Image (cartoon, rainbow, N blue to C red):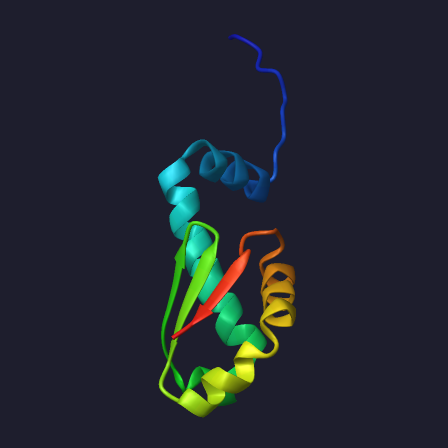
Amino acid sequence: MAKRKAEHSSLGDVLKDFISSRKKLSKGLDRVSATDAWHQVMGDAISKYTSQVLLERDTLYVQLSSSVLREELSYGRSKIIALLNEEIGKELIKKLVLR
């Protein structure tokens, strides 16, 4: 019988390698991560006024049903971007567009 070289990798490491080798999969997971981060960071109060969250390149587009809330959130754009990137764990979002 042939001997195998014992090499142990965690499942997380194997998945990270697999995802990083597939660009389309990585982009799709980034989109999901951005949407989840928005709802996690902003909480239920703001999430119920959010109708759509879309990540395209490095810009996060957020559709809000309240114009008053949109105006209030526009004052804290840079802080929101920093909180979202911290939640995601990487510098993914550079611009936030509130619609």
